[in-house]
Length: 237
Picture 1 (cartoon, rainbow, N blue to C red):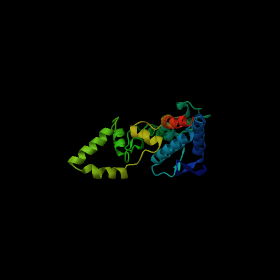
Picture 2 (spheres, rainbow, N blue to C red):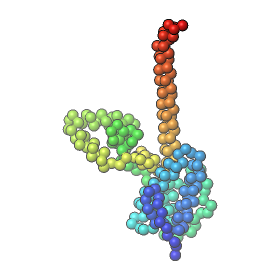
Picture 3 (spheres, rainbow, N blue to C red):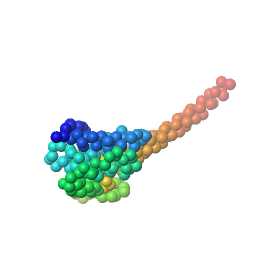
Picture 4 (cartoon, rainbow, N blue to C red):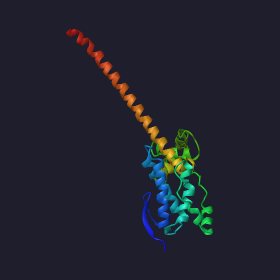
């Protein structure tokens, strides 16, 4: 008889047996150590947990408890620690699998790379619907989708109703895993980490540019101010 535990993973409650709990802790700890020096470490871990929770929900298929079968299937999709340069497990637990467990693992060992339709928060003007359509169909510039919507309004008027409907029913790509699926890329640990770090670098660059712009504007304002004050100073000398 194996002890079971109730856990929260990625904001979702699960029941997990003790063996799987032990190994998932080791797996997440290896990831945390590997990305400890990254500024986005916490966000990377949160997005990885959210993706794992999504996969567990899919693989359980009505079952109540996460076991080593489900855990190994999820890790096959996400990637083993050594796959992305982290420390490997101290022990290899695959040798303890029965033939039925190995069959289960082979069944779910594939990585789903099919695209999913999300609203793109990074390309949104109103709700991100056009940006999401562009990402789904591989169109580099979502402006073409927006122009298409505007053009169809004059001929049919359908997009006036269609846009708010899509805005309401299509989820926004919030996590790094969602953004990868929106582009049709596998939501593995390494890809999630890369996406988070790229977003942080982009944000840092924007903040730096804004700081430079503000500094330049302050210099211009101060220069204009002293130019206006200069005649008055000469009058007092």
